[in-house]
Length: 178
Ligand SMILES: [Cu+2]
Image (cartoon, rainbow, N blue to C red; front, side, top):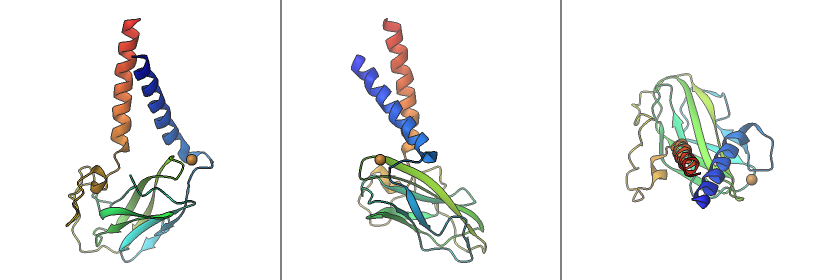
């Protein structure tokens, strides 16, 4: 039981560190460029969006999604990690408005880096959207991998929620014992 409490405390600390790291200057990997650039006004949808970091990122566990003004998912396929650059394909876009790119990736030192940026589409495309962003997108055609990263949805909010719930339960149980 003691070990379990220690593990949960560690996980909570890690989660808090992940959440708190966004605004804190640190030596961890940081996003140094984005394509399209932040707040760009585009008349044509980009075929892909990408973020460049200041160091190479681990190819595993990278997530990147594009959510449109309609709240739907417009990214398609798996995120691609190429050294310090993470990118994901984008469907032909639909409604004009703000599209937000969300990403989460692990740097070489194991720290998780997550964030988002937005760009504007000023001329509506004719395409229809993908799945609603709240639900996992179906795997890309031909994709054999059905792991969670295939969906393109960051899983960490759910992970943090689960950690919080488990942590509360363990602490409650531990308190009852003493
Ligand atoms: Cu780090």
